[in-house]
Image 1 (cartoon, rainbow, N blue to C red):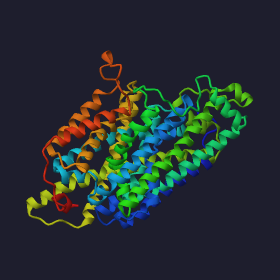
Image 2 (tube, rainbow, N blue to C red):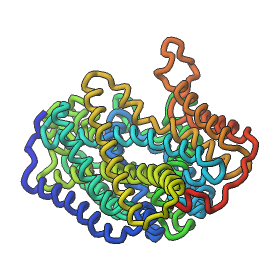
Image 3 (cartoon, rainbow, N blue to C red):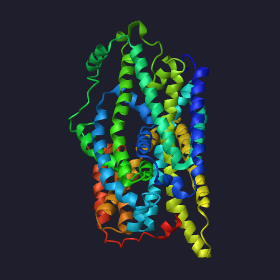
Image 4 (spheres, rainbow, N blue to C red):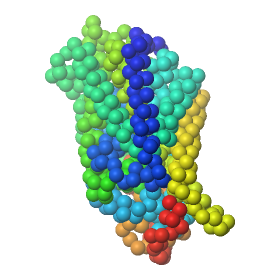
Length: 525
């Protein structure tokens, strides 16, 4: 597919200016990195409003930019009802998770588990997080490459996708290496602003392109051939559907407590706020502010349905290009039909949504690698050799090296995903997009045991996580296809089943003595 009008000089100028701006921000904030805590937590001095916008930016990935319009284009608005549970879950995390994890004073939230269950528990939790985040964020980078390959080459073959993914990975890694969590938060605030402006501009341009007044557009959506496309609430009792009101209220509350309460990628920037109260308020506020942003992208999909699927309503204004794949519906519209300048701004919004997820992921992964694995090992080795610890600058260098390593790892996985999908094996991509259930569902049970009880020990924690991973695997719809149970559940109900079981397994262990605040890992950090 070739872009209808091609990218103009103005479009390229917008994209390149945006990329240069991100690199400048990373260079400016890099001057303040003096130790590991400063690099990964920003000295716990970040303002709540910036933290809130950063959380929104990270939760709204390229999958949102591309996938949410496709969802309403092909379906309706039921996805929005899941944010009832998301807001409830955000409140639970802000009140019950943020204060104790913030006061623990550890570089990562998994350091809290070391105090409760020992070093092995912390390392196991960090390793599980690293594995899940590698696959999930790598797959999101692959999805971001689709839009840019269409922009750059006009197609999405492996030869066209791979160079684009490498460029995205290199740019995101460079400014994150320079500035640490400060660069992540400040660039995220810019990126979410650009994303919302671009999406809003697309809505207004679509309304101008459709030769119908808004009331007639609404009436056409309500009487669509496949059913009411403005349907918001589904009261059916199908556990296989993730978008019923029951899933939105109950299951998504549990999922959000997991994704925002025990996922270091999300909680890291909350730990960088000036106090646990401000961090909790930033998190809860981000969940509320996310709702209108998601609604904006769903609205784009509904308008694109009129634009592409209703030539009877479009008349002479109907587009001449055929829509071959609904996943490309928004990028195709942007590249073929938006005017110069606005087209560049919208693609900058796609770049922003991709980078806001990528930069936070590699920074969070690097903090786990350094604080939970490298620095404890380094402290043990120095004690063994009878040597003194070196200044914090050495730790900053190790932190930057870890960010570069994680950025390279995510980029490599995204490139591998390109070739695997091209060969016809799409299961890995589907698995990668939902793989965080394997890490976060067991970790939610473990953290609830650690935060709200005095039960459990290192052995029961490790058994709990192993059992949780196995349970999530068994609940996958592609497991045992010949004997699939009629009552088999889909996402997000996995969490509702797995997390309570992991909690019970963890608290079955005899209580372990609490670790002091000055363990070897704390001294190393």
